[in-house]
Length: 98
Image (cartoon, rainbow, N blue to C red; front, side, top):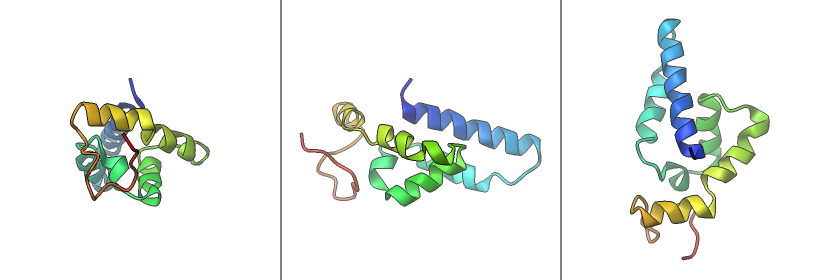
């Protein structure tokens, strides 16, 4: 399982936990919408990505490592190959040459 799907699962867990404790989960519901796009982390600034990662439960000391995996060249090429990302997209914040 790649890092992206782990983030999706972690976010779903945060939502369920909030619901069982009758806490507000609006932020994680928004994140759930963002994560419908597998290229999300390539389209946002690193500060926004770190914010999302913290909100799904990634610890501060792991943020940089997890973020690097999410925007790795391999992840980029896999998304291009599966047509989930267009390498010519002007909205990409992070991209690699093919």
